[in-house]
Amino acid sequence: MNRFYSRNYWSIGFQSRLYDGLTPESYFESMRRVVTYLPDGDSLSLLDAGCGSGILIQFLEARIRKGLVYTGTDLLQPGVDRALIRAEELGVEISCFQSDLTVPFPVDVEKFDVVVGHFSLYTLASDEARQAALENLKSVLNTEGLLILVNPSVDYDVDSIIERSLELIRERQGLLSCLIKQFMIYPFTKAMGLRFIQKQLRLKEWKAYSREEFIQVMERGGFEVVHLEEVYAGSAFLGVGRLKHSA
Ligand SMILES: C[S@@+](CC[C@H](N)C(=O)[O-])C[C@H]1O[C@@H](n2cnc3c(N)ncnc32)[C@H](O)[C@@H]1O
Figure (cartoon, rainbow, N blue to C red):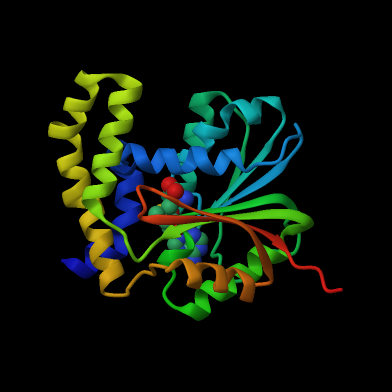
């Protein structure tokens, strides 16, 4: 059961839309933080690497309408399909294709001004696979471009994620929405999502980072870390990197 669940976890979530429905508010908050690091400019090109169901598109909607060119890619076709449907529902144009981040991109893939990996690299099977993915992302980044990565931290904590999410909902949507989330939605978020992820991290099936390790991995991948912060109620790090240029 556990093997079936871990192998099909994302696909089932994307197809059933449970992934979107159960996502805690502090995860959306992490995406909002990502958006704040995007450079100004209307015609920015952005690759969402491991885009899943394309939730980030919602937070980029206004920028896309002004000219930002969004491209998503994911290993799983159900994720790609959901991202395309989401864009259609929002009435914005995007492109999205299926690919494996650990193998080189097709040669005709353009270069991007920004590459985002929001909670995607940590699910790869080994340090080597994550390093290979980083190399591939580097190869499609413009020389002056930005890499924005978000990955879980070693302090990943289900209760803090839910507590912070409830605070955010109360502030933004009021007490009733908060109570609905607390008693009708988040118990499932915990049981079907966050606890499973926490277990995968503890078993080292997926990767949780310390601050130092997060920086080290980006630097080893050829990036200078220009910013690092905690997001997701202290359960993840957001790092912004620029390509190192040899003197
Ligand atoms: C936690 S989800 C994050 C999805 C999305 N970025 C978000 O924040 O909602 C992890 C995503 O990484 C994708 N992924 C895992 N391994 C991959 C690989 N080798 N190549 C491309 N995508 C991969 C999964 O299919 C899944 O959609």
